[in-house]
Figure (cartoon, rainbow, N blue to C red):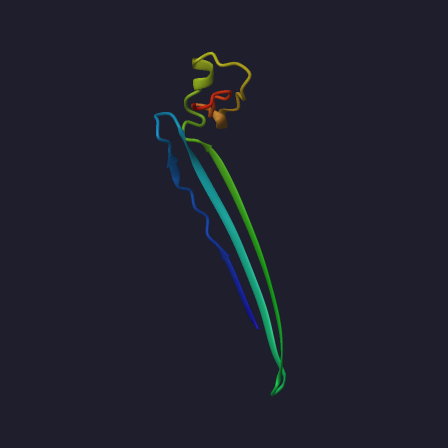
Length: 98
């Protein structure tokens, strides 16, 4: 019979390619493995295996709680939650290359 449990939290910064971009991402993976092996006869083995994996990830801007760029630039209609402070992500649409 065997049991293995593992939890390894991490929190690396992920800087962006431009100033004010990037995020702080934390991960909390949890892993649990259980196995049971029983020899019924010299030629017959019974084995049971089970596993569980859960990963919780959160990501906030590097400027969270510090620098409200959305309000500074007068951008309206975006979230004003302090966890989301910093430069918002945006994409231009409707363009195509020739």
